[in-house]
Length: 352
Image (cartoon, rainbow, N blue to C red):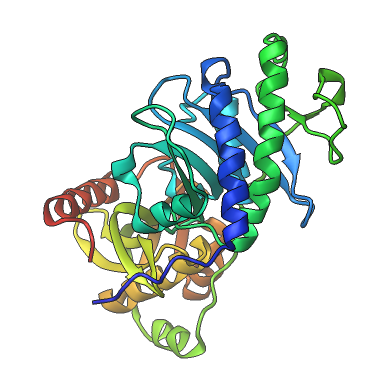
């Protein structure tokens, strides 16, 4: 049975400083006067990368500060554009953030409790008052912070606290602003309380989703080309993460990325494969389609895929195999198969 790797080591002095910073943040209770959509931007001083952070808790369900990075920027900016529920962090494809969340003590792991003990944290109140730190990456279940991530939060969290203090004094700060016009904090903080004049408002658009072409091994391509064509055979294909199907690989709990090829006429599943969710979507889709076609033993005339998300990844392969690749607004038979698979995983415990 595979085992999870041990949590990364973080220096005791970092934990003490980080717990102190989260204590200051919690004492402010920013969720009482901020909204999920009050996003603020900052720049990672070590890498120059953009971060967007939100305070969750106005709905009195999740009390947290979330710092979105890389793929997570696309999710948060898209969510701000359509005013989705920002408290929903279940978008496994774009889970890419650092998070401080206040939870009941029963939700803390031994590693969480060890960090709190190092910092000599004193509980103030009952319920969701215990700090828990997590890092999330696409395709992987949230995990513990490493030293670099803890150092980043140690800089970012006090800055978010300063912003929240200023927002409390200026509750109309976001009035008249577009949801994706983000106030960025100064790179060098003034030696005084933050003011609205210190902010740099920037209109941002969600970065495009770029799915790269898959690698096609020469031996597999040779086998595929040798298969017979059935021009009348039409299929539906997709490759996506199913949060219910998870497994441990390389010491981390990952979501399963399921690829299914379904015959369109009768709804039969011709091929299915499961891969590590951390594999890039385009590469995973390519591998999944290759496996499914080899399993089927026949090359279909047409394959419908859901929208254009995977088209750039699969088009070169389909061109080589003389298969028409057709984006579609919906894949009813495949969606039915996925729903059935999801239900089966739910009934059997989900992990494999």
